[in-house]
Image (cartoon, rainbow, N blue to C red; front, side, top):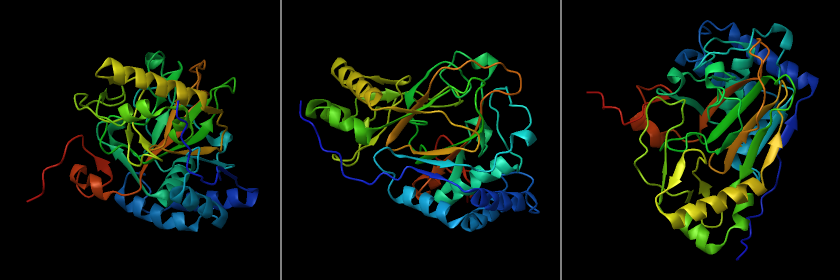
Length: 336
């Protein structure tokens, strides 16, 4: 087996806010709640203000976000700790399918502020009805599903791996942990796993011999187009896979896919998010999942806010519904 050398990049993977910095983030988020356009986070007028207000985040936080955008490091993740989440003021954890957060709350505004500083927060019309802030919560009817509403172990995957304009970055803000405090978010970077694969497997994974289905949260999707699992630079590739939804079109490709899964599992790390933690992952480099946990559906279950970020919105312009941040599944008709 030929071992490949991972490009040397500096790992600056976490920043924990001081109490003063936490108060500064809260003040900016609270000001956005009072803005005249603060009816919904999806309102284009509020989005414009959130983009401007994001420049007023604490300098040390801004530096960490911009540094992550420029170079996501060998693990492809950034953890921001001690963000302004107040458990005493939270409502009950939602427990319905397709749950979203459209109202301007301090947690939703916080997630949007950090996301907008990294790039453009966007959404898909066919997922969660096009909302920009998703609630990742356990849902009784989805308990056994491979979805954000499930509570079984969630297989490693790129977010929306099937989509041509899948997110560049994902943000997960923890409002509540699970009751036992054991639900772990799993992360694994192709930058670390690649050195465990040989040339033959790498060559196969770079060929269009794989098909990926849309996740359960999507209400549309085409799983007929073959694609590569590894793309871009040979020495530092991007990854496109969902180990629950991606299948190989032949046995040789299937073997390479299994070896990739083994390599990613070997280098995976686990993080139990606590209230006030926000994890960002580079969806081009990192697959993620979740360990099993036991929800009680009592209003105090695990609750995350999720946002999607694009670093460059121009490639998806033809899929945008009007000038807004929501993408359709196929290209939209040009306006006359």
